[in-house]
Image: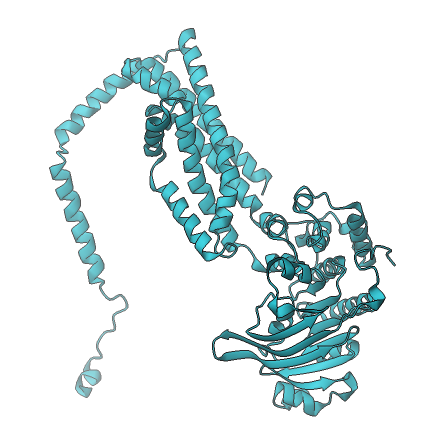
Length: 265
Length: 267
């Protein structure tokens, strides 16, 4: 689709798998939100993490790109332990990981195209960001991504003028702009209506499949998880209690993940 | 005990008396009376003051528009404008980094506290007192006034920048951080867009305030129209004093209109 993958010359030979070993996070000492979670995610396909609110799904995903600092454990990605990185090395690692947020987290007062181009900030010099002199190749690609998301005509509008679904499309374009080797999505559809939710999941899944990059998505909606994910990980109270393909997820697993059973009727 | 509840239930008090507050107000009132008595504030002096004031005002009219006076007025006013504008621009440029360094959600805590201490120091003294210090340090003239107003602008603007940054949405910043942006790019694309409109509003207000204060710092030797005004007072040129006062009022009003217009433009 775009011939601009010069940053990663041999994308085919690249190992994009992620290995999490004994990941532990305590926001307050002694109260673990994540209890020694271990998880290996293959270098392609969508992995959905389901589970009740407050069970550590968000914390798990945020530990990967270090928006949250883990207390203990390893996160191995592209030959590095992300849990140990700091400063410049951490920034270099972050720019290879795109992230999509529940509330889109666009910079509201910037234009749509500026938000998309923000995905290049890890690559372009500070003065270019300041003067908005992004390389022409990046600008072209940003327009391509917006066109592909059906938002080409909104490029110069301010982000806060868009609807929720449109904002999330911009959020996805920003993540793809990074040319990521991994996409993290933290409840990307929880603030959207059912129809838009499906469209957004379709967009994430198809873009990731085209680029052969793995996606890890936190999601509340079990049906959406079943429909789009290749693998479902169920979490409860900071631990993984289910791990398997969507077909293997049965009601008894859901009862174990969410507790109770009345809601399943 | 049960008898009383049966016969007449005690009335419940909705507004219990606040004795500490009452005592505090009484003490304050007593102190004001005492302080007034030892400061020799008497009605006679007050009445006499009316007479002096009336004579003073009568000597102001008509305002003096002689060409040589207008020349003095023009050069003094021009210097004041220059002091105010340069002080605002320099203050604005320096307050951004200082304000960012003082924001506890961006800067490391020791740096934030050090910056806050510096800002507090800048804000401790009124611009006139700072101007007196600078007059002693660099001598009479516009430079002293300008430096005093830069300090005042820095104190005000940095504090407001720090507060605006602390109130911004961290979600937007987090998203930019997640792209691997270096810190300065994060500030440019994630922080500045959120605080810029307010910052321009503050800057416009500070320009307005510097225009007023540039007359004030002149009174203590900081140059500009204040120096002209002070000289006119010393020479009992009250008619020229009125001319100067009218000119200052005009400039301050124009400044207020311009700053209001700037604020609306960048809303």
